[in-house]
Every structure is written in C-alpha cells, then in structure tokens.
Image 1 (tube, rainbow, N blue to C red):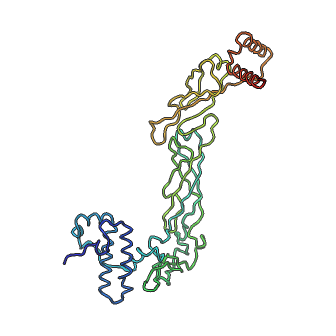
Image 2 (cartoon, one colour):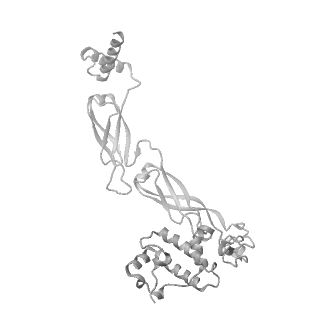
Length: 370
C-alpha cells in the first residue's frame, strides 16, 4: 500500500515554512490526540501519521532527503513509530502549558566575572598571572547533595521522576513536582557542614595567560572555571582587562602617544633628539622653527595587534616647547638682548604669529574708529 505524502498529511504545500508546518501540526495534533478521542483507533492511527510526518518535515536534513527521494530516503526499520503522547505534547505544546523539557531549569553553575588590572608593559609583552577568585564549590562531606552522608530521600510525590501528571480538560500534561522542584529527591537530614546547601565558599587559584597586544575592555573566557552547579556542571569565568595609566605613553588601539618636551633652542634652531620606544631609543630630527603641538609619526613603533602580529601600530609624538625657568641675571640679559634684536632688525619677521596678531589688533581698532 502506497504511503501518503507527508505534506498532504499535514495539509501544507511543499514550499511551506517551518512555522507553517509547526502550526499545522499543532492544529491536527489537538484534533486527533487520543485523549480527545478515547477508544477511537482511527484517530490514534491518524495521530501517529501526523507525528511521523512532522518528525520528517520539521528536521531540515530529513526534509531535504524526503524532497529528493520520497519515502525511499528512509529505512523503515530505523524509524521509531512508537508514540509517547506525553512527550510529544510536552515538546509541541510546552509553551502553552509550561512543561516543555527544554524549559526545565538547568543546574549549571553561575558564570563569574573578574576585573584584572595590568601594566602597559605586561599588555605589550604578554604575561602569566595568578589570581584568586571566591567560588562556591561542592561540599566534600555530602558530595554536593546537601544531605548527611550524601543520602537523599526519593520523592514520594513524583516517585523520583521530578515531574507529575496533571489533567487539564482533554489533556494530560506534565508539571514540575512542587515538592522536590524537579530533582526527583529531597533532603531528609541536611548536611551539618553546608547546612543543606550542598556547596561551600572557597577560593580558587588560577594561572591566567595574558596574550601580548591585549587591550582595555578585552575579555578572556576560561571555560568551566566558574561556580560549580549542583549537578557538577561548572559555569565559565570571564576576565575583563583594564590597563593601568602609564607614566609615559597613552594607548589608543595599536598606536602609542606621548608628549615630547624640547627646549626653545632646539625648536628654534632645529636638531636631533632621542626618543623612547618599546624597542629602545630612536633618533628624531626636529626641523628649524618647530612649534608646540607639532605631531611626529614614527611608523611601526607601536603595539603588535593581538589578532595579527604582522600588524604593528605607530608611535605619535606631540611636541611641547618648554619655557625655561629659574634663569640667572646673565641668562635674562641675553634673552632681553635677543628679544630687542627681534624688534630692531626684523619687524617681527622672527615671530609671524605675533606679527599677525598685532596686525589683526590694528585692523580691529581701525574699523572701530571708521
């Protein structure tokens, strides 16, 4: 006897989307479910057909194989036609009655966060640092059960299953057991050491490898190093990096910035100075007449990228001309003579900004008067 087309069974087209298939399945499953048709063998067989069709069409790989080869794509001996009505109703209608197996609370331990401050030097070179973190670990005396000697009492309300069946109209649905909260057992005599909690506070020492090039805001995930859950599954530890303020450099991405103080003589006459980099000193030529705020870029003297070592940032140096202080009388006299020479012989040509400023003032007052 030829088998019915799965699309025809659900009453959908071959181009139907997943949500349309699921919607059709819900509608037909409610109509032909054995709880709504007690003693009706035809309805039970129809429900099995609907379930089988949905099992194939709701799975993308199985659906593709069925579309290409039809029923021949599946070995009938390998398809389980045994129908567990409570399971299938829990899977499809769990969002209605709140008993879906996927909605059961996981006992995985909590994730932890740790803020780690490191120096710029450590971020540049990479380092292994030891940290101590407070965690909750399973109690050694009760093996995390919370019960004396690890002995738990089987829940008599759900008979150890963690769920109970409740009748709601035509349906029988599963709900989390209110006594054991889905655990299937309960504590009769609480553990003396952990007071029935199953866990104790502790400190864990970890060695954390910090890769070179890491930056503020980057996170390192240590799988399974968080709190241990009651079922033994641990959460993760997330380490967030913060780089301390540096006395010399400011970091922005892979670039480094620094302020470079020079004397007014070097700024005026020009010269060559040594500047610090991550790899030692390099020479930088200062042109004659350099002004405060001038930025010099030194290529490939920044930080290597954490993702690609072939990418290296730059070092940017901002010139700061330092005004001399604590001058003696002789030095002051020399500067007075120098300043006087500017006015006598150059008409402010040595100070173009001052000259421009004075011209602007002169024009301003001229416009006011006229």
